[in-house]
Structures are given as structure tokens and as C-alpha cells.
Amino acid sequence: MSIENVRKWFMIHTYSGYEKKVKTDLEQKMETLGFKEVVTNILVPEEELTEIVRGKPKKVYRKLFPAYVMLEMEATREENENGISYKVDPRVWYEVRNTNGVTGFVGVGSDPIPMEEEEVKNIFNIIGVKTPKENVKIDFTEGDYVKILKGSFKDQEGQVAEIDHEHGRVKVMVDIFGRMTPVEIEVDGVLKV
Image (tube, rainbow, N blue to C red):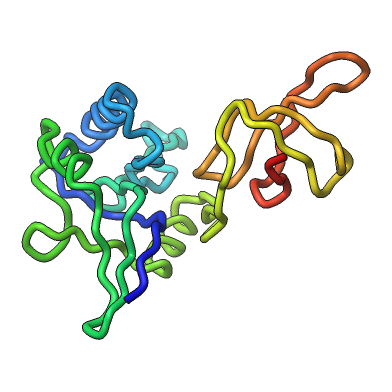
């Protein structure tokens, strides 16, 4: 039996028309309760369309999945003789499930089922978002010191100011000509010192 922590996307079902409110409420709730490291991303998938209104083109956004919100969160992957299963932190599951407008996770019974990687890629392609770096282990947090491994700042060291899990990038404060300057790099382009 093997067990490992992974980041997976889950779908949660909401009342129709409450998707953006649920997203905002969940972001605030995860921040307040200290679950920001467990729930790293909340997304209402929308595609941009152009409609003609009174003879003029107007950009509008249409929800791909009305009454659903995507949630990227940490899960425990368990592999045994019966197959592979994913478990989420029960405290986080409880808080998400009991958010106003949420009716539950998509899954069987009380167990949420993660989305397939191919499903996530297809959705990101439709909405025009790059697929996040998959399976990149981030062994540093904001405030840690890292060494830059590639690019024009290779071999320089700096302090992590911000981690963007959605786009797989990290902002590092580097000393350039005596001033601390933010440099944005892919997460696999730095190493904790």
C-alpha cells in the first residue's frame, strides 16, 4: 500500500447563480481558517464570447458548467490491492460542504472524486488558461531563501515573496544593483537553500 499527498481538482455543486458568491465566500473562509495551503485554487470556469448588442460587439462570459465550481486541493492518494482512492482533509471537506450555496462535492456518497487530468486540461484550454504545472513538488514557502537554477538570474539567491500555484510560478526578491527586485520564475527553476 502506498500513500502520497497530491493536488487534485474537484467539482463542487452549487445553487444555480451562486457560483461567484460561493467562490468568494470559499476564498475568504479558507484564508480565515488557515486552509489556504490545502485549497490552493477556486475557479468558476467561463468562456469569453462576443455577442452583438444593438449592432455593436460586446464581450460576455458564459459559465461552462452552471451550478458548479472547481476546487484545487490537497488530497491523500492511497493505492492498494483494490485500486486507487483519494481522501481529502475532513475538516476542509466539512467547511466547503457547509458554505452557503454549496450542495456538495461531485462524487459517490460522502467521498469526493477528483477530476481526471484530461478533463482539467480540456476545461483550461476552453477558458484560455494554461494548465498548471503537474506534480511539481514545492518544498519551499513564502519567506524561504532559494537559488535560481535557470534564466538570466541563474545561480543568484533570493527570498520567496509569493507563490502562484495556478500558473506554477514563484516571485523571488533578488538583489540587483543594490536594490531588492522581484523576479518571476517557474517553480521548477528554483531550489531551496
